[in-house]
Length: 303
Image (cartoon, rainbow, N blue to C red):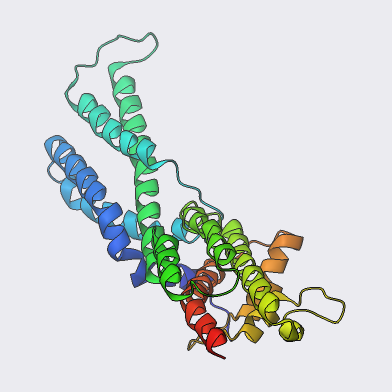
C-alpha cells in the first residue's frame, strides 16, 4: 500500500466526518457559537470589514484543529474543560476592555498603544488556547462515539452482562473485570493514545483471565485451549481466538493478533508512539469484543 504524503494525511484528518458528529455538536458547538458571536460583535464594532475576514478564519481554525485531535503533530493534551470555558469568557471580557477602556499612561514605560496591544494579545492567546481545548475534546468524544465507546459504554454493558450470563461460572469476577474499562474513554479524550491501547488490551486480558478460569473450573479438559503443556497461559490473541471471538471488518488491517504483537508489545517494550488509526482500531476491537462476549459465553454454556 502506497504511503500517503504528509499533506494528504492532514487533509484526510480534517475531512473525517466522524469528527463532527453528535459528540462534537453537543460538547463543543454551543461554546464555539458563543465564542464566535462575542468575537464577531467586538470585531464588528471595531471595524465592520473585519467580520468578512474573521468568520472564515474562525471556521478554518476549527477544521485545522483536527491535526491536534489526532496527534498528527505530536501528543496534544488539552487543558481541563472548566479552565477552557473560563479562558473563553476571560478573552471576551479582555477584548471588550481593550476596545472600550480609555488607555492612558497608567504603566511606566508603556504608551496607551502598547497597553492596548498587550491586552489584545492576552485576549487572543486566551481565546486560541480555550478554542483548541474545546474543539479537540468535542472531536475526540465524537470519534470514540462513532466506534461505540460512549461515556457509559461499560456501565451499560455491565448491566447487559448481568442479564445474559449470570449463570456462567466465575460470573462475579468476569463482571468485575469490566470495571477498568471506564478509564479508556478518558485516556483517549486526553490524547494519551499509548495508554489508551495498553489499557484496552489490559481490560480484554482481565476479561479473558476471568472467563478462562470459569471455563477450566467447570471443565478442566478444555485446558489445552487456554494453557500450554507447562500450565502457563497461551498468548492472549490465541486465547481470544480459541474462545470463539474474531474481529472481522472490511478494510481493517488491524486484527487482534496484530494489535498485541505489532502495537501493544511495541508500546510496552519499545516506547512506540501509536498512530490515531491504530488507537481508533484498538477501541473498535475492544468495544466489539465486549459486545460479542456474552453471546459467545452463551454458546459455551449450551455446548
